Length: 232
Image (cartoon, rainbow, N blue to C red):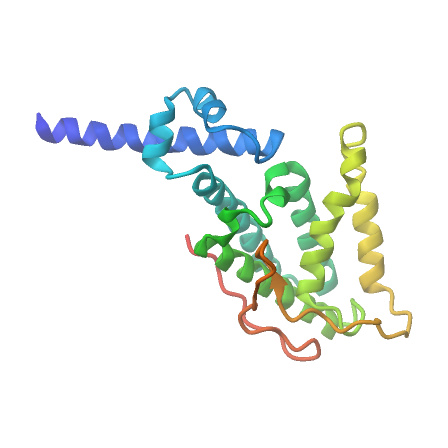
């Protein structure tokens, strides 16, 4: 009987964690990071105490949601590395990123929060930069993007598109596609003019102004690094 009771408790814990993650993901996506733990618990059908038994703080819960989203994007980018058309693969990756940012308000709002300092979240962002660089390097080699465009350029551009289109999205949910196309035009149209500032060597992640160097920062003219697959 004791074994049955313990198994039932573990099953309930797994179920409650899944309910919490699903409820939190939906509410963060719809309303942003200011959603309270109480609102998430109510949507999940559990008590606030249950939330804190699984996650020590709201930032820990937000980190878990971010890891899921970043994992999806890293999987998407990793799969696109096998595509024959490197330019189209990069376009599809950029589209997938912006779709995620537009769909999930909390994703972009998380920048600078303590959850972003979560070691696994930072590592997942570094992996995203590496995947973006691998895709961009293939496109550079094919002549599908301008010389000197890097993966970090791409990550910064796609994250900015959501902010650019945000005032329009309530009335025009697909308006982001216009600004994505403008960004793609900007990196694929070779004007023959050099860009006026060198490419970034790292992606700033901390609100305090500290920066985290992206592992293996790419040489814009070099070979693409091997993109690592996200941890399961």
